[in-house]
Structure formats: structure tokens, C-alpha cells
Image (tube, rainbow, N blue to C red):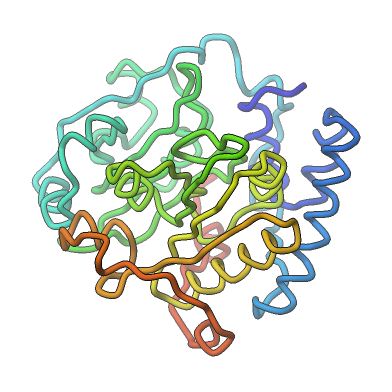
Length: 315
């Protein structure tokens, strides 16, 4: 069986469902593979109903990733810790305006981007150069936050939140991943599913078992991971924007196809869970169960153009 680190690299290298199947699903049990293949078909069906585009294919030639899966994760990468709390003034202002509690900063090892801007800085900070960090800092990182994901003491993914102004985060960049941030999905237990990492932190801070894909869209394998574990109920906390509604409706339809009980919630006052609980300090009285309609997802919205971002990268 491939390691999580190797699978993460495969996902980053292939970007497509077919690439994932080709590279590692032959390691799965037959019943798991059949379920994964079925979910792939279901996603294509649901995409035709909900999304304006049924798929996004990223030109592999734009990605300088020609190392074999096993070669990219040498043994010296076993114990990596990013921890740095030397936030500059802009980053401190951002944390203050987002009202992210400092116990959350410590708990999730959220660190300043201004301290991690090139390979030499990684070495100075005592961090062995990691393929994920090496690629993500290639375009030059300035002010903002980095949120690492560790598993068994290993750094297996990271998300960058770049600072746009003193009140908003511009966008996040992460290596596409099989992993959820947050809690373990346990068979027969209730789970919350949200979009962003700060949303997940906010809901966990409310004593909810919660997971986040760090994206508005879940991958085939992430849906597979939820469905095969058969939680008793998936509570979907939707962002209040068209992409959030599309994602929540897509998840609902996929869970319904697989007989997974689910409900959709959103805030009456805020865009997402992080704004609701952290920034506005609201309680559960302003969170309601909702039904999403096609009219709600057809509004135009601004979506970060990841393909255009890739074209400008210095790989």
C-alpha cells in the first residue's frame, strides 16, 4: 500500500481521476475499488446537473514534477515542524481582524508566511527542505499565514493564505490532497463537513467533530473516504456564496445516492463558519438548516483562476 505522502504526490502530479486510478487504486481491495469507481461515475453525473463545467484539466506540462513517487520522500523528511511565531505587523493585523484566537494559532501551528520565503529560510528555521514547501514558495511568498497538516509527525500538506489587505485573505494555495484536515471519520458517528480550514477550526472550537478538504470541492477519493466509513450523519456547513452552494448541493446528491444521511446548514449573518464564530462571535441561534435550489447556485461569482496562476508560476 502506498504511503499518504506518496499518494499526495501522485494526486499533485496527475490532477485527474484517471491518473489517480492508474497510479494507486490497484493497491485497494476490490470492494473499495468498485466503490471508488462508482463514486467517480456519480461525480460526473452530479457535475452535469450542478456545475457549469463538468471537469477541470490542468496541463501537466506546466508542472515540473518528474521525480518518481518514492524518490520524492526521502527518509530525512520524517520529522518536520514548521513552527515559527514571528508574525510581522501585517500578519498580526490580519489575525486581529479575522479574530483568530491565539490558542487556535498554537493548536494548529499556524505560522507566518513572511518567515518562509525561500529554501535558505527553511534551513535557517531548522526545517528540512520539503517538496510541498519547496514548490509552493516557488512564486515568492510575502505576507500571510501558512497552515501545515501533520500526520504521525510528518508534514504531508500545507495551505498558504496570502494577505490581500488588512481585513481579507486573498486566496489559499495547497497541494491537492487525499487528506482531510480535522477529525477522523468514525463509522456510525456524526461528522461536520465545511469548506475552509478556519471554518473547521471554528466548528471544532464549538466541540463539533469536523473535517475540511481546504477547498469548496471534494475529490473522488475524499467522497470515497467519507462514504466507505458510513457516518451516521454528515452536517454540511455551506459558505454563503454560489460556489459554496454548488459544493453543498453536490455533496448532498452524492451522499443521497449512497444512503448517507445529511443536512445542510449556513449562517444567517456571516459568509462562513469562521466569520460567524470567530469574527462576529455569534452563537448557534443564527445558524439554520437550509435547502439549496438551482437558483441559488446560478449567480455569478468571482472564482480564483488557478490555471492562470499556474501559468505565472516559476517552477
